[in-house]
Structure formats: structure tokens, C-alpha cells
Image 1: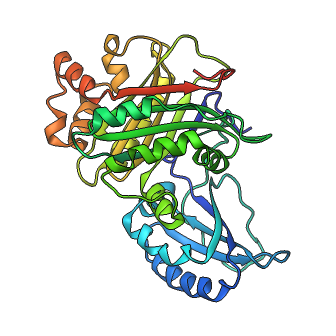
Image 2: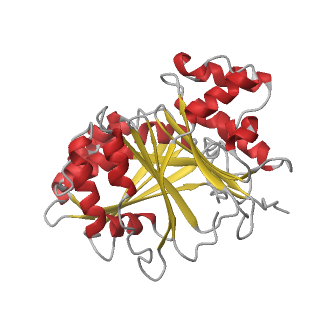
Length: 375
């Protein structure tokens, strides 16, 4: 009998093979340009480590609708590629051909092979070991930097916005938005019940949100023009900070908790390994009845690693649990993965407390839907 975890969980680090599904709606008359761009793209993707195969499909009902599916040995190599500058540049030729897109990512849990085929090649990668339990909530974050010296002005603008209507449609609802700053870096984490893309589009169209985005534009380190679809697409692609791991106790409501975002300054090229370490440690903490953590989510893109934690106690009262890494050996690994200027010793209680205080991001605003039962 298959064992199903009772915890709410998601993870990009279970080693299972993944299937990526990209739905596209082409512009009228763009088919030839799209096929030319795809031929160039697929030849480049074929050489990316971890890539197994891909397929291009056209709808038999609506020829303007296309589907690209790809298979990868595991999530980390796919995430490393899809979040890279190389990918942003690689897919640029497709943007002028496509009216709308939607990307979906799945772990492979079961598969049926053709036993009649002669000596079939064994598939690469592993299958997801067991089903996970979800709570119907999609977690995602955006991150960007502002010009040094503008932090207080940006924080004031971001704290003063009017919350948009949380109900997007019959099936999609914006549950929570938590916004933090660490120096000149902004991180906006969202929780959505239903369709994440629909919720983000709904929010971006609201006048109060547009006003805030326009107000902070002059302070951004990376220029953007949200009225230009290509500029907006590139900005939000680069700003995406995916949730690579989440774990929480099951059941509605987790009592009185306080939300923190911790910024872990990874050594160059070590972001994925650092996120994996935090994810494994959070899995272990979830099984520890002494843990004061109600839930945790690790976000990672390149060497930007942010861990969102909901704590039942003050942050400083349980620094080891709050930090997310316990034991001398794991702390030594953490030190190796952190930027040397930020890591410090991490060997004494004072050093741990000092690092934790520096990692704790400034909470700008944390807003929930009125009847949300999530902590």
C-alpha cells in the first residue's frame, strides 16, 4: 500500500523526474516564425544537462493553440536552466509570436511502458516515491533590487498600498501577500488558492497596484516599462523567485504565529545546494514535536535564497530552529555555502544570534484575505 504523508508538502529536491508542460496561444500569422524559433530553441535545450526529451504538439481543434512538453531527470537542472539569463535570451524570439502562455510543472509519479517493444531503453531519473498532500495553495515570490539610498522611500510606498480585491474568479483567490526588504532587495511572497497566473494578472490590472508599481519605477535598479508587454515579461521572468520547498503541519489554522523571511547570502554558484540543505533540515524539523515552526517555504533563484518561516515563538527565543540548520556538521556545511563575509563563525550562540538578526528581513506589510484560515 502506498504511504501518503500527512504533512502539507511540496519539493523540488526529491530526485524525481519531472514533466514540464507549456501551453501557448499563437498570434495570427505567426506560425512560420514560431516554428523557426522553436527549431533553434530545441537544439539549444537538447544540450542542457538533465534534459531528456521534448515534444511540440498542435491542437487538432484550434490550430492557434500549441503545446510543448519536456521531460527532465529531476527538477534542479530544469530550475537552474529556466531561471538563468541564458534562458531569458533563448526564448526572446518566441515572445513576438505568442499571445499567451502558461507553464505547468509536475513530478512523475506513475508511468506505463510498452512491454511489447523490444529491449526498451530504461528511463532516466526516478519516479516520485509517494503522493504528497496539498492544501490548494500555490506559493510564489518576486524579488528585485532598488537603488541604494532609496530603501526608506520604497518601503513607505510599498507599505501604503490599498489591497486589491482578493476574489479573482469562482476558483481563484489571493490568500496572502507578505512583503519584505533586506537592504535594497525587495521580496514579495504570495499565496494563491487556484490559478497563480490568473491571480497575478488580476492583481497587476488593479489601479491601486498600478499606481504603486509606477511610483517605485524610478527607484528600480533594473529599468522596466509595464505598459510594454515584452519589457514586463522580461522583468517578471527575471524577478521570479520560485518556491522550491514547502512543508507545514496539516489541518486548518496553526494558532498564533509570526511570519519571518530570512535571507541567506549564498556563495556564488551555491544557491541551489543551500536551498536543498534548508529543505532537508525543514523536513526533519517538521517531524520534531519540539519544533516551534508551523510552516516553512524555501524560495530560490540562482544565488538568491529566502526562507519564509511561520513561528509560534519569538524568533530570538529559538535561534537554532529559526535558522533552519541544527548540529555542528550541518552548520559547517551551511558556512561553506554562505558568502564568507556574511557567514561568520556560526559556532557560538552569540554568532548564531548575530547571523539570524542580520538574516531576518524587514517586514513591510503582511496582508491576508479576511476569512483566510492559513497562519
